[in-house]
Image 1 (spheres, rainbow, N blue to C red):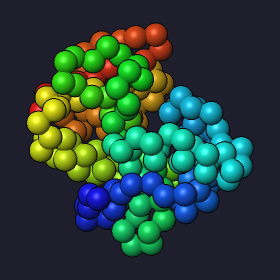
Image 2 (tube, rainbow, N blue to C red):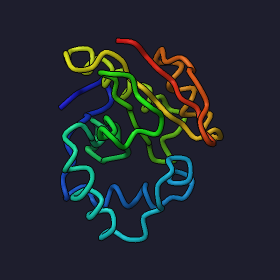
Image 3 (cartoon, one colour):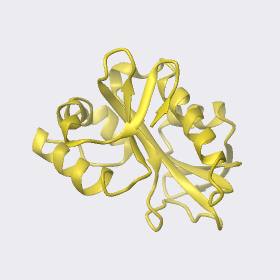
Image 4 (tube, rainbow, N blue to C red):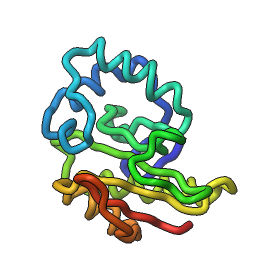
Length: 162
């Protein structure tokens, strides 16, 4: 578990399905995050069980004040990257619920994940890929020190050396 002044970054639980559905059913989030919009709580529970909980480097972003899960951050499973990684490089993925956009939560979560990754001997750099239209995600990457390294399909790739 990781902690910031406003957030708890922790492993997912099936108890988080209602919170996940609340935000993952919003097409404004899913369209830019490049995954299907959730259609019901059962779909959110399945995503938690089959994708989030099976990847030990995928975390729920919860508000410290309420405990509500409002987003997700973590390392993309090896082999699922959107841009070719360097040796000892991992791709980071993240999203936050629409009502929390432009409040600094994603930047706060990413900074904490970067510090966690700096402690790991198996990671020397991080990669972030974004949809070309996702300027907010690009700003988050840049605020956290990532540099644009290339374009692919309809996206951009950023890298941070640890």
